Length: 116
Image (cartoon, rainbow, N blue to C red; front, side, top):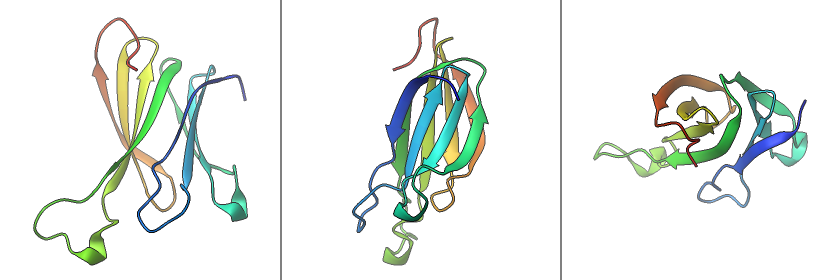
């Protein structure tokens, strides 16, 4: 599986005592989403191939906004995985907050150094 280059733990959702996901980036240019659920701890939920080695990872919880958001939808926002790569590219990938599946990756070149 390779040596670890970067990792991040998802924020703890409100009303819970632990985080659900761990993102691990390795020197084989991959990011894996691992489960932190006690029933299947460290099981691989998703894998994303990257164009370069990840230097930093950050999982951000983006809560739903707007007047139509009710208390029932309080946890309906999105999780985003930000991956800063060694070649100066920042990737933003949407994560499913239930399954950990990754989709809708967007790329932005920020410069010649890795985003932190």
